[in-house]
Length: 183
Ligand SMILES: *[C@@H]1O[C@H](CO)[C@@H](O)[C@H](O)[C@H]1NC(C)=O
Image (cartoon, rainbow, N blue to C red; front, side, top):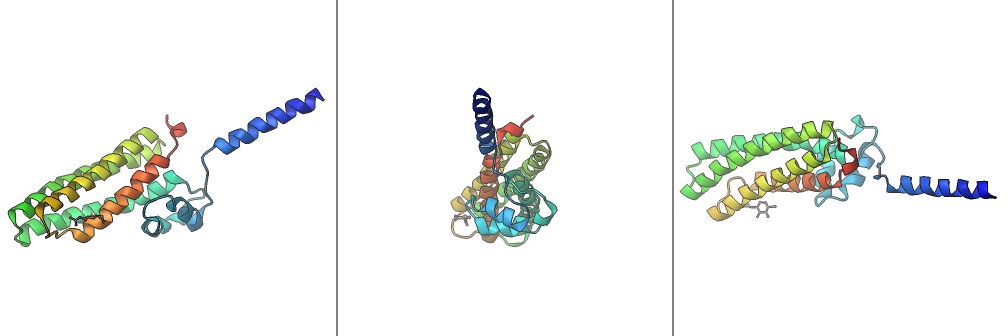
C-alpha cells in the first residue's frame, strides 16, 4: 500500500516536471507554423522560417528564431545598401538625408547585434539572445522615428515595414526562449 503511494507521488512529480518543460513543437513547417502563431506577424514569420524548416527535427522558439535571424540580416544589409544609394542619387531633402544617414548606422548596429544573436543561439544563451534582439528592434524603431521626423517622403517605406515587422517577430521569439538553457 505504502509502496503504491510512493509510486503515485513519483509519477505525479514526473508528470508535473514534463508539464513544466517548454513545449517542443512538432518538426517541419507545421512546427514553424505553431511557433509563429504566437508572434505578431504569423504569416511573415512562417514564410521566412518555413523555407528552412525541414532541416530541423525539433522546431521551437529558438530554432525558429535561428531561421529568422539569417533572413533578417540579409534584409538589413539590403536596406543599408538602398539607404546609401538614396543618399547619393535621390537628392533627398536635408531631413530625409539626415534620416538616411542615421538609419545607415542603425542598420550597421543591427547587423552586429544579429551576428551576436546568432552566436548566442549556438550557446542557447537566452540572456544575450533577448538583449541583442531587443537592441535590434530598438534600432528599427529609432530609424522609423527618424523618417517620421523627416515627414511624408520615406524612400525606405517598404523596407521599413518589413524590417519593423521582422524585428517584432524576433523580439517575441527571443522572449519565448527559456532561461533554463542558459549557461
Ligand atoms: C514603418 O513601418 C511601420 C510598421 O509597418 C509603420 O507603422 C510606420 O508608419 C512606417 N514608417 C514610415 C516612416 O514609413
